[in-house]
Length: 131
Length: 142
Image (cartoon, rainbow over all chains, first blue to last red; front, top):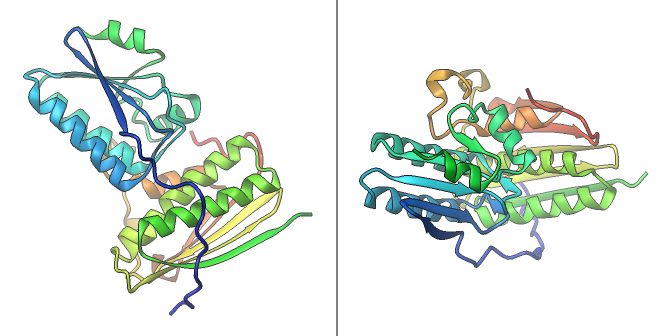
């Protein structure tokens, strides 16, 4: 139907770093997103799998997601976060989100997912909020 | 006034979609779109291209996605057309409704409509036309 016009290669290859950095604070697992974008489908699937593994291995998971480096995310990323939230809730665990830049927080706000997630301005405040 | 027009036809794969998006975002930056407007367009474009490739063409490499963009310092107009079976916008539920809030999908179209000034779905939902003005304060979805 459409003419087949070739598209020139653009610079900016896919991110090659692991998409998350994992650490631990007492019984809380801290997951920091290491890329500025959470939009690539494969990347999101990989992050989702990592979160699932962390959630599955703890009887009552406590998970903190640090968005400090994130400048862009997609609806697929939101879906991945909702999935993690559901798994944690099912195990009576706790999920906290922290360090979200204003333009990203706006995405949570307009989708009203700020009502679903516990969002804290800083990692320290999020860590202190776990019970 | 600087005006840039792009017209591309890509196969239904995410990497090709990403390159189109990068190219349009580069054009936005080149004509002087502010950070807020560029963020909005980038987000809407990402969702629209993924929708066309994944939900429109169902990742069928034989099917193409056509993307046209016209960019000036004042506004951008983007048309994205897939070769799928289309959809009825009226049947897409509001993802903000309480019963949908914990659903993992269904936010892409809402985000497009929230971040762009004007959005039209035509040709049975296969064709999307969206416009965003380069302004600091709008639209700020509420």
